[in-house]
Length: 101
Image 1 (cartoon, helix red, strand yellow):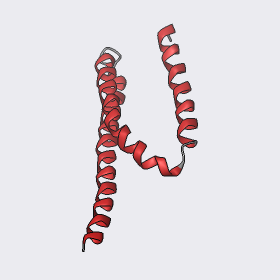
Image 2 (cartoon, rainbow, N blue to C red):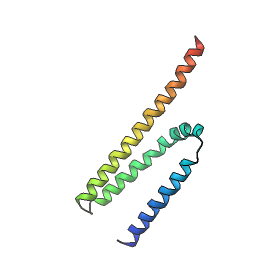
Image 3 (tube, rainbow, N blue to C red):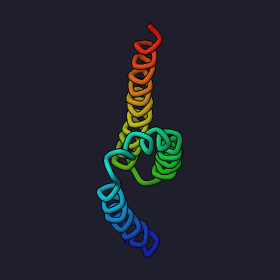
Image 4 (cartoon, helix red, strand yellow):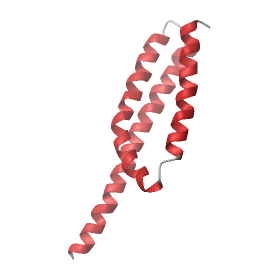
């Protein structure tokens, strides 16, 4: 492994641990609004996966497959997040309609 690859692996593991600790300490009342805001930022994940896949074309067929899986997983994450947010907002609209009647 090159020095750059080692640095990238270390950054991945450190960011995974920090992300877990941050999300684990968020109160449950804030999860839904934070999830809604993070859907927009998840597009960056797609962009990163596409760039990583483009760079992996020099690395062989395994790198290409893993990059493709990363792109698919990122797209699923974004669309599922928007679906959950839409459902959440629909629940608030349903409550508002009950009060109007």
